[in-house]
Image (cartoon, rainbow, N blue to C red; front, side, top):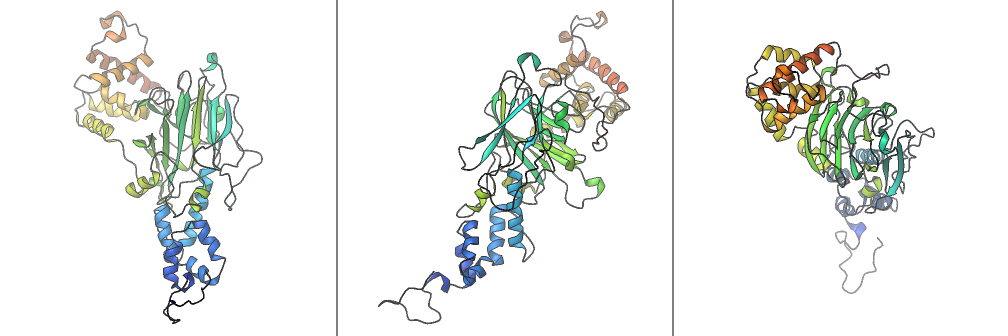
Length: 462
């Protein structure tokens, strides 16, 4: 930044002449600094007063705030908001999964560490092993890997290797900053692919169950592609996933200060960077949920991914929006404003069923109030006037098989459940749903927020 000695061809030494970087007006100097890495901008500000003035220019940080985080801030607060989002990104990238809190309580420092995932792994259950592996594509970043530690004859019952993040998860800093998001890369699906990606309250992993099997937990399961919530029977959602797939899930938190009747969240899922949809559009007490992953058969191994760390943002030149995930979360937040929508195909099927006339609308409406959410689709299929075909017929068959012996009473006219005509299968499912509703009429599957006194006697996936 030193001024050169005037040569034979040097311009006249007048106030309007620009012979070095420091001769530029502060606003022009700020534009030059905008092409440097954020870390270099802060370092340059410490060298001389002129650069410090340019590095503190609100326009510089307003542009960086939008360029990197797709966000805006109050006038004069742009630099502070950028720094707060950078720290939040570091905290999100450093999240760890386990059964409970680490006794050492490792904290995230404000400085930019060389290794974003420096926090020690949380304690694990006997059914889970965890270790760190360096990210080959990004220097200084280590990923947490989870493996099931049981044997072939133990992959039944409450032997799930489940881990969740301890403490309140940090939302990603893009846009409104209300989306908690992470991805799981399936390194090996093992013997059965009993892998679940989802959300649960803190302390749930100690139950050794899959996310989605019990109340106030939510999961997308790889072995069947179904989503589960509060119940051991899954609802159709997407394709099964296994080795080589990357499954992501996001929790959209309510706006700060939202009234109690609007404090619900929403959960969406992605696969290999594509949005699959939001099977849980209204989640009670979302701030009590934590990222949770379950594995349950020999050879299953997954890698958790919460972000690339603040260093990847601070060292990028020119500054650019971080893209740590297979799914473009930043673009999604900018386009959708944090909202989530069901996939078009699923939404179309739901509209078609709602438009179809029910054979017994009052009975169907009454049962819907008593049945868990995951059975509402089966209920709609059972009460359609038109006999179900194709996938809908097989969905009713799946439900009937899970709640009724394969052999039938002679009064049905056929020996086995698989030989029932569509109308007969609908009738059988109506009977099963009615019995189920009567047994569980006093249980509130979609009710209040989870509590420490919640019973362990929930329906599971056995």
